[in-house]
Length: 222
Image 1 (tube, rainbow, N blue to C red):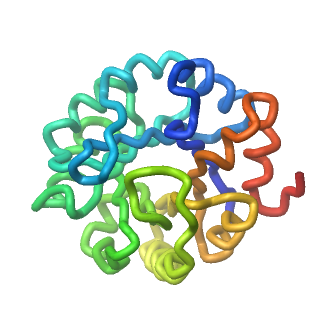
Image 2: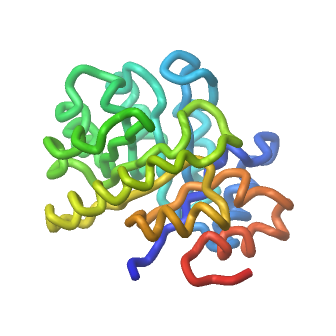
């Protein structure tokens, strides 16, 4: 079985204590820090931008896994690179030239990712599979937390797993949305190698974070 990365989404953290929250989830066993960036236009919510990412960078040595739910995305690539993002993920719908966007992300020194909404087909990844380091399957409609896992996305995860394996490349297959102790194992069984979780990690406060993270890993009983 492949190792599974856990990337807690700080969207569910205490925003008044974000620095402390990030340090706490790192100490609790997080592999990456998932940062959701929303513009209130591409998705129905408004969150944070490069200045906040830059301010949080000193609180963790883990990779910052930054998911841009914004359109256009290209004008902000350099800003997020400067702020300390390690992986920058964009949606195909966020601009007219996905290949160019991915090249720009890599040229800025970051790993590149593509995010697929529930209605976005896996086939859109095929033309750019040589240019990505991560594929993010949204198992809810993006824009806010607390939604239920959409079962139909399991087929998309499996399709992408086959596509990635056929490419021979080391590409992270990440899933985000409605993931918890019950649904995360199903995503991993379908082929996911990274799990994004918000409320499932942050519920119960800092004393519970280690158990919450461990419970999302395959084969761990907590």
